Image (cartoon, rainbow, N blue to C red; front, top):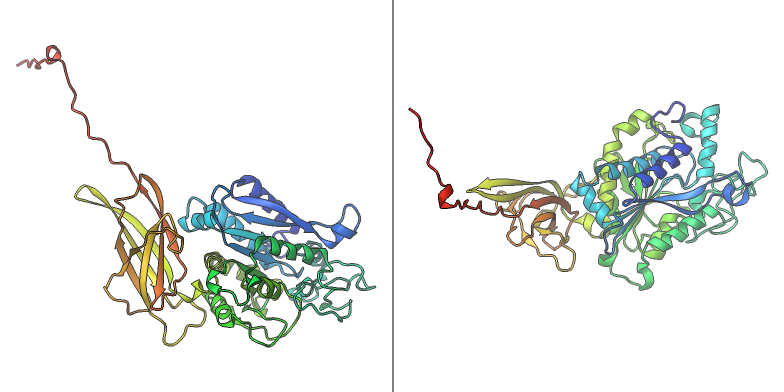
Length: 468
C-alpha cells in the first residue's frame, strides 16, 4: 500500500490484483488490454503501461446485456476512485453465487472497470508521495499524463486527459498548465483508446434523432476526486441537456445514502468523456467526485474512505441495476428488503415473498413524495423481458398510500419445474413508471416418490417366537 495510506494499494498491486481476479474467476472476469499509455507508446522499451479493463460478466449466459462502465483516475492524483473501483470488483466476484442480487447482475449485465486510466501519471504520483512532494491533500501531485512534448519543464508537461475527448474539444491552453487539452482531440493514446472502447461496448442510440429514451441501456460513471458531487452533461455549455430531467433523477438516485449531491457542472470545460458518451451515443454519463475537502481532498483519508465504502458499493450496485433503462428506472419505486422463505403448511411447501417498495430513496426527495401503485414478480425472466409472466403483489395493509410500502405474496410455483429459479420483483408508479428491481432465488424440489410396500414371499413370512 501507499505510504501513510494503508487503504490504497500501489499501482503495481492494483494491476496485479485485478489480473489475479481474472485468473481466479475465468468464467466471470477478463483482464483486457485496450491500448497503451503515452510512455508505453512513445517512451523507451521498459517504460509505460498497458491500459487494462476488468470486464465482469457471466460468460455462460447469453442475451443483450446492458453495460455499466466505471472509470477511475483519468487524473493521476485521484487515489480513492481507483481503490473503490477495485473493491467493487472484489465484492462482486466474492459474492457471486452467494448473494442473489450480485449473481443476477453478473449474469445479466456487463460491468467494465477501467481502474487506472492514467497509469503513467499514477506511477509518478506514487513517487511524489514517497518523496513528500505531493503536497497537503495531493494539491501538488500530478494531474496530467506524461506527454513530454507539451512543456519544456518535465515537472509541468503532459495533457489533461479529461479534456482530450472529441466532442466539443477546444485547444488554445498553454502546454505547461494543468488544463492543457492536447494538441488536438484524441491526441493522447489514453483518451483515443478509451473513446474507441466506448464505441465498441456502448450502443449508439443517437443514430436517430430524437430517440426513444425508454429503449436506452448502459451507463458511464467517471469517478474522480474530490467534491462530493454527481455532475451530469453538458459540461461544455450552460444549456440544458435534452434529457436534463432524467439525468438529474439518475444522479439524485445514485447520490442516495452519500454526502454527494446531484448538479449540473458549475464550470464549463470541453472535450470530456461524459459529453462524448452522452452527446454522441445517447448513453447517460455522470462524473462522481468522491470525498470532500475536509476528508483529505485528492488524497481522501483512509478512515473516511473505509467509513463510506459500503454506501459507495451500494451506489455502484444501484448503477448496475439502473443500466437496464437508465433514463426511466431511477424515477420509479425501488425494491428493497426482499426476502423469500419456504413454509410448511398441511404437508406442503409454500413460498412466501416479502419486500418493501420505496419511492423516497433519493439524495433530495420531492414534496409531496410520489406513491407507488403496483408491484409484480416473475420467474426466470425479468418483468421487462419479452415472455415474462407477471404476478401481482399487494401491500400488506391492502392499500397503496405510503412512500414505503411493505409488500407480501405467496408465490405461484405450481407450474415450475424442479430446480433453482430466479424471482424478480419490481414496483411502479400510477403512470406505469417502473423502478429498480430486486432478485432472489428459490429451489423447487421434486415430489418424493411414495415409499413402496415390500412384497415378501409367503414361505418367508414367519411369526416371531416369543419366549416367556
